[in-house]
Image (tube, rainbow, N blue to C red):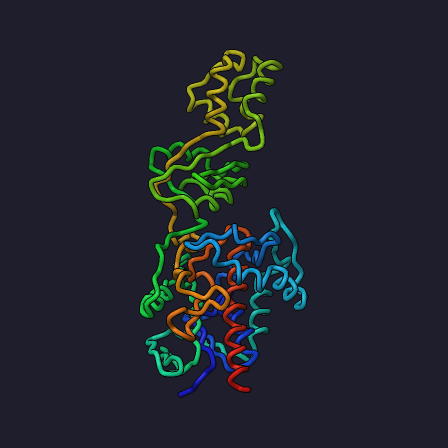
Length: 399
């Protein structure tokens, strides 16, 4: 039976990166049930991988314990990963709000991760059948390759998002088998859906995009929103979806950064004979302007509106309240909110506080970042925390 210093479950972003550090001082095996490594890396960012963000702060992560991620994020920052990308001569560029993307293909990041993890061994199309605790580590039965032993076991299996990419939630079951609590999980960074009556209204607006401020109590995001046949999408909606809870409302400001009332009043003074829909199209896409006017029962000219009626119209623009019925679910969710409770993990090493040698990293943990490269940065940072601790122990044992 082959023995490794570390067995890493999952060949995604976190698992491959952890192997790069753990393999510096000991033998490492990475397994994954998929036929190819890092599939979510491959499809991310439209195939260009939004691999980190220039503005990483702990406040941009959701967790039961908002302080937990601080240690790992501080020990391995976005600049550390950027340095790695530069060393591999992968050209990249910055988009809005500090998001960094490859100039070419996300496959370059995957090839970098695979190169960095050598001499660790990678086995694909291999799943875990059994896990047993032993005196000096773990004995793991594999669906191919028999049984292996490992002094350390790293769970980097991801969450439930995008099942067609192979997501299963197996990491949560492993955590519970070892006595760890798993917080409530739900789809995050996902489009919102609505009841048929609302969808009927949205149908003629499908494809319309505009900047908005989307809010729920205690949180708001200003970015683009997109109307679809299924509901609402776009960055602002994906962001707020991670904070929205079923049964609650979202509030939309369709003219963020604009004093809509003053703008409309000025238009009334200068061009009062404009139709209300035409006047609204100075602030909104034409199709949406017509929809807002019709929904408010507003016809005639702008000059016909009193200040009070004009304020009511502007409230429709800036305080539009909608109650989603659900999200599109894990099928299209970019991440899973919730996961293995951080209260059972060491924030410096990601190791279990109750099962020595057991580590949880990446999306399987109850740490979820905003849209824009934050979740990849959590994968890199948590992987470094676990991988360097495993390498340190291997070095200490060798000495």
